[in-house]
Image 1 (cartoon, helix red, strand yellow):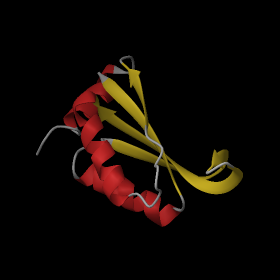
Image 2: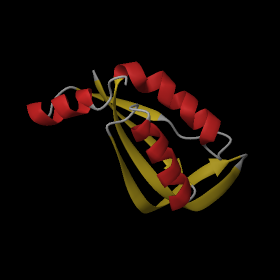
Image 3: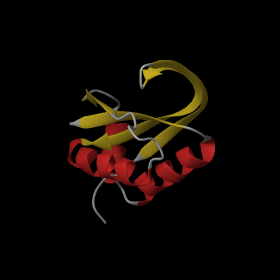
Length: 105
């Protein structure tokens, strides 16, 4: 099963660092970085608003737990967002490429 994983970062340098770790280690075939989003949320009982950077991580089922471990280790947030969505439909050539680029070295 193929996966799209989402996380937010406080800034572009953090986003680039995490994306590079995930791609270099073959945990993600590709990570899209959306440089500026506004997030509105409650944190410790207070309404907050932050400029953040969104990561869209393309991966496979076997890497989901490893990606979460990387986020826990390297992410600056106390509670980093980590949402994983399933997909199994896409162009055959893209899905083959995704599989090839998430296989162990």
